[in-house]
Image (cartoon, rainbow, N blue to C red; front, side, top):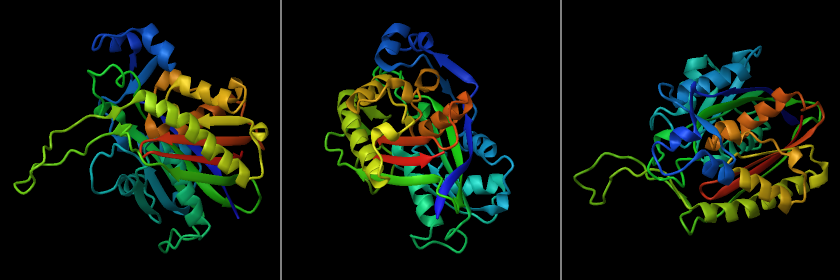
Length: 328
C-alpha cells in the first residue's frame, strides 16, 4: 500500500534580513553573498519559537483534514526549543492531535526526508510501533528550525547562509499506486568535522571539560564536495529502486543549501536547471525545513501536476543524505 502527501504547509517569520543588512555585522556585500550562494535574503525569528513556526506550517498542511485521523507525528529539527518534552509532543498538544504517537529526530538537513521514510515505514507496519502509530492512516511530518540562534554572526562564511522557518506535510495511506515510490537513506562518517555544533549544557562539579557554548561551524569546501557526491548516490539509489532514471523525473526538489551546489548537481547528473526548484534566494538555508518549503513553493507555482515524478533530496550534518521519489 502506498503513502502519499495530501497536505503541505510552510511558514516563514515576518522579519526579513537582506544581504546589505548582513554587511552591517561582517565584512561582506550583497554581491559577494549572492554570487557565492544565490541568497538575497533570509527570514529571522525574533519572537517566534520553533514550535510557533511548526504549528503555523502544520495548520496549513492539516487544513480540511480530521485531526483525530493523525496517528503519528515525526518532527525533524536540530534547533528544538528545549530538550524535553519533545517538539513532536508539544505540537501534538498544541494542535489537538489526540490519537498521535509523537517523537523527534535529528538528521540535520536530511531530516524531513528521514522523517518521511520513518513515517512511511510505520504506516505500512514494517516497523513495530505503538497502538496508534502502527498502520496509522495519516501522519504529520515537520521540519522546523531557528538556525539563526546557533549562528556565529561574526563568521561571514556561515552567517550569510542561514535563516529560520518551517515546513510540514500530511501523509496518508492510499490504495492506488500514486505517492512515495521509493526512498534511499545513507550516513557517512564526518571524519573532517565538516558540520558541527556543540550542545549547551550546564556546568557540573563532576565534569572537567569546557562547556562554553559554541555556534554552528561548517567547512564550506568540504560540504560542497560531499554534497555533490552524496546527492548523486542517494538519488540514483532511490531511482534504481523505483526502476527509473534521471530523465524520468519531472522536478528535483533539493535541500536549499547553496545555489552553487544545486547548479553543480544539475551538471553532474546532466539535467537542465529548470527542472530544479530554487527557493534559496528568498529564504536561505533552513536545514530540515528547506525540502518541504521548496516543495510547497513548487506546488504554489502551479507547475506541479498530478502524476508528475518528483525527486526529494536532502544532505547535510552527520554526515547524511536521503532521497524520496514520489508521484504527485
